[in-house]
Length: 225
Image (cartoon, helix red, strand yellow):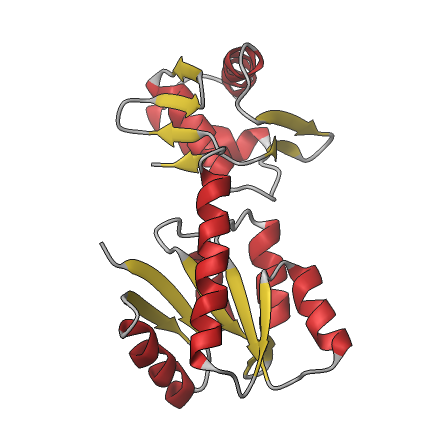
């Protein structure tokens, strides 16, 4: 299966050239030219990597990458820029980019750097917990636990909102309110169930409580499958 790659660039000519070149190396590419629409796509675990331009019209690719990392984006991200000064490269890397490639660039070098980052990501992913929503299980190495449907839904909700502590009321409204019964403290009950299962084995993450803000995950986020 060909790897899916996200290109975020507001220059249609460059985006098209990147897509054609990457296709010759076996990639299937999708393009986005706006930062606001690109952010949720950088959280899509179906992409193997992303290439993000530093300048996105009035928006900043560096700010986009920073927001994506804060929201839990784990895919390799390569940044492209005509700005070669050390401070610009440092800003991109500090925001969470894995590579910073200066224009004009060698296409062979770009693909080589991309493949190095994908390889590193695969090694990292092999150590990451996997949340399987089909059979409602959580696995990491020799650690394995079965979850109830509601526990799996709750954990998936926290993963998808990583970087944003979720208030009890927001969780309740998402998972329980449509049933027309119950109270918000049911959230605490199920958080307790999950914490007990997570603490019994090593899954690489935990559920933290942020005072006056809500619940969030800490550690290596599980991958949803």
